[in-house]
Length: 193
Image (tube, rainbow, N blue to C red; front, side, top):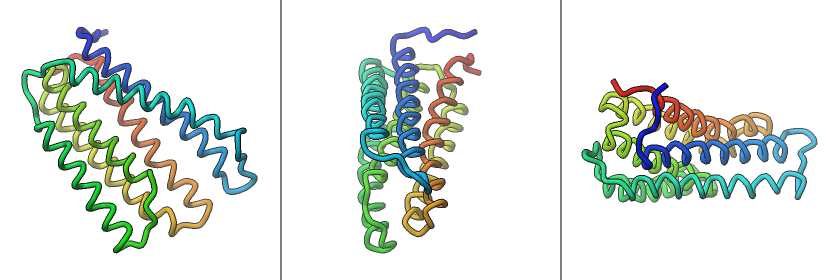
C-alpha cells in the first residue's frame, strides 16, 4: 500500500475525509428534514447541521492549509485564475439563474461553486506535489467539472420539480461532491503512474 509521504499530502487526505463527513451529515439532515411524507424538523434533525458545518469548515481549512503551506513544483492552472474565474463564474450563474431562469438564489449555488474551486485547487496541488500525474489530474478535473455541471442542473431544476422529485434532485450534488472527494482520496493512495 502506498503511503502519503508529506505533511501536505496527509493534510489534503484528512481534509477530504472531513469534507466527506460534512456531506454525510448534511445528507442525513436532508433525508430526514425534507422527506416527502412526515418530515422530521426542528432540533430533532437540525443538530446534524452543526457537525456538517464543523466538518466542512475544518475540511476546507486542512486542504487550504496544505496547499498554502507547501510549494508545488509545477501547476496546471494559476491559483489566481481559479479564484478569479470562480468569482466570475458565481456572479454569472447568479445573474443567469435569478434573472433569466427565475430561480431564487440560495446558498447552494455558492457551495457548488466554492466546492468546485476547492477541488480544482486541490488537483493543482496534487499535481504540483508530484502525487498525481498530469493525466490523473486532468481526469479528475474533468470529473469535477462534470459534477459541477450536473449539480448546477439540479440546482436550477429544484423549484420546478414536485416534492418527491425535488427531494431526490437535491441529494445528487451532495453525493457527487462526496464521491468525487472519496475518489480523489482513494487515488492518493495509489502510486502515481
